Length: 216
Image (tube, rainbow, N blue to C red):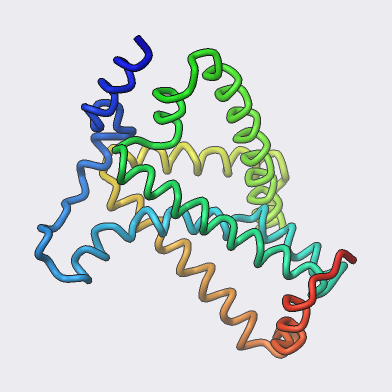
């Protein structure tokens, strides 16, 4: 019985496609199209994923760690980024090979009793992650505009709902909005690294810190 269900799932890879309507709004170029046309079609998810490394929670953690330990823990950031790249490549290959995301594969190929523990653990992980992002965004609004923290949290939650509402207008619009955010952060980060003498890092010292890990 279990074998039959797995074979049925493998025979119809598009049956459980997540956000099928949203993904269908992106036109896929023909196979003989050039590299740049394919790049434009598929670069959107990469931009969306990049936000996970530029959110206020990460910035707050990195700034606090840098202020206390300077470059001593920079190797942790580099190692974590490398591990994330490996996991994302594996996830992309899983999606290409099966036509499903990780949650759908867990449902289809793991024993049935594992579904509830998987779901509960993922909900806890999502809640803990979102808590850090919400607080980070709220603190940023408070520091920039002197908004009371409670109202800053409400505004941050509203931003999330607004972004979810934009899904009805197609994936390209969401990708465009997120791209603007990413470019804004990138420009600000570039100014902080190369434009201001007060925040310009010592690249030689950074290289030595990454080459010789320290557990400070």
